[in-house]
Image 1 (spheres, one colour):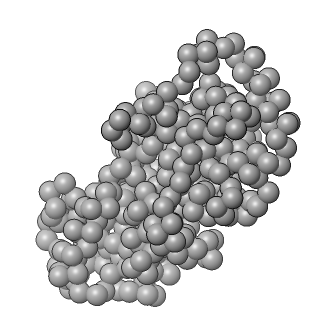
Image 2 (cartoon, helix red, strand yellow; image 1 turned 60 degrees about the horizontal axis):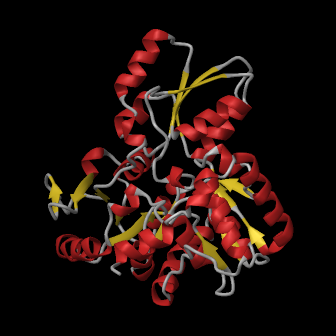
Length: 367
């Protein structure tokens, strides 16, 4: 059995869960949570479906869940309702006696997949030749454990959309240039916020193994890895222009994973946590168009009924990989714990975990 076949086998949902009535599945989750008590902990990312998030013991964005994972010492099992890199981070931040489970191993992240460790190591040689020992690597937490380990090994750190500005400020106290992986948009938007001009940034294309345009060592302060979020890149300036003409009363708030042009055209930009807090504090009756994942936008509409909330792009779909975690997979993963056969365990090898932990701790110390 090859690796692909192994992953498909481990992720294959038994047929009985596909036909099990929703109310039966929900009751089963409640029973198992009650039986396990503190031995079971279910963190859930904001982008999860309502059918899953209703059972989360903690909800949050990447930074919040990383902090929760680091502090949790009681649970024997952590069933992570998010995507693969989040479960990896939870495993890195928790002791060996705690087991991290991802209900569906296919719940990945296209952005994380855009920065391969072999590509990164090859690129690093080019960067060293071009710029010398002047670069500190930072990686968005939406990256593989191997990329986090690379940053840890080279003195760098992880960042989230909540603390990217603070982490870049710290990084520039360490070295004069930054390599930002894997999301070029968050890197660019954060650097601009710090007063770095677009002319002082250069994009590295890992597929072509080359810079886009000239990389003048005298000018470049930030090297942006050519990666992106397949959801947030779908929001456009045209969406904003259309809405402003249709109803100029709408305030437009977007995630910094959106393109530079969209962030500049919007009224506000911020992390998932910042978006939620901004809308919570907004006046009753105010109108908001939100440029982020659809599951969260739908939930904000349901919970903040005193405001008018819409998606900036009405044709937007939810994050497809995040949506692989559904109620049937959650029930299956929990019942496997009951019978003592946990499936879809996420385990990072010790060497990678130790180096990645350095990068994560450098972030958490400043969070």
